[in-house]
Length: 227
Image 1 (cartoon, rainbow, N blue to C red):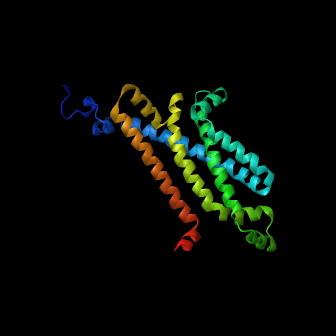
Image 2: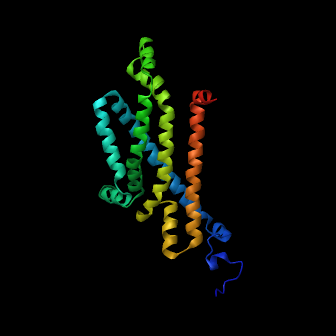
Image 3: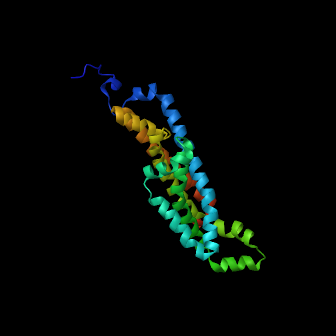
């Protein structure tokens, strides 16, 4: 029988422990900030790469097959294998985790952005050209705005996926909350494992809701259509 005081949840190694939250607050904050930083940077870089790839695939049909095939193959590589392949280039660093997440996010983003661009009605393009729109202006003011709902749907999935995959970065010491989960599992520290896991879920839900709200803000015509 444990000799720990009845109010000492840390000594009892309880799953739910308020004392863990109060005594390890700075550790949790640092882990959350690292988790958010890696996620945001990776998804942002992936978005910057995915948009031109989707535009190229839409503009030149022959490029769609190779682009989609390449991004799909990257997505099928197991995360541990991906990090191992990238290790010689980036070493044991946060950049290694970011690079891996960028490659995983490309599949989700490219496919959705391309689907959105393909869904733009051809008569809309023809009408814009008739008004004197050049290719760049047509893309920026007509095609991309109309493709935004599909693109944001892909962004939501990619972001939630990245929040989950960041934890794998714990194998190189840059996993955000994954570091706490990994070390907690090794020492069977229940409160740490549960708290870090719950925080990962909270981050994913909040990020998804924020992007959903952003999508509704940027595409008011979709609300009008569903009313």
